[in-house]
Length: 291
Image 1 (cartoon, rainbow, N blue to C red):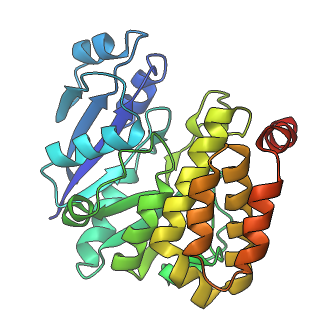
Image 2: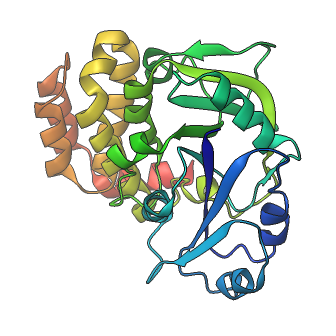
């Protein structure tokens, strides 16, 4: 039987922790729980120290470092064959670990499993099916899943710690090396869709900092996946590239935007260079933040 390591990053989730950690149970699965506190200020870490959770190992970052850094520390501390990533405001359903263990043990050739989360996919299939890197890159597949993946893969491809968010930047290269992923059309995780302070909602382009962060995320995205995207879906490439350049202008990072243009594929480079030169950063930033 393969061992499952459940990795849970925590930042200021004191109210949610009893629900999240209390949901972890199994009849037969071999598992451990790796919890890494990311410098919480609401008493989350102190509460975690008092909780009696089976197979839990607790760690704490020296300061608030972001979810990518925190997940990497959890992966390093894990001893399981597979990693199951769980957010601290979500919870596993009662059958989850035994279901995951059943499919992992029955499919030893699969490196990366995807299980369903309540309300986060529109999956009509009733039997397992596979999806590819092309499907993800061309956005034929979307939605959030519970990822269960070989720990060795995550050690080879850790999350990019220079970004406090945008973990998709790493998931894409993981999906490239583990394709095809096996989708199991069974719900194993309940996801909290009501929170107003979750990470995704804080990434809205309402500030210069958010615009700058997204620009550098897209810049790195094109460095890693631009050639593949252009080969597979040139129209989507052009749309995403245009968006990235506009964010670079709005963030007043015009030199970096020009460097993107120089290394781009199939673009009218002179037109983009003129756009960068002529467009006022402040005016474009105002338009973006007012949307």
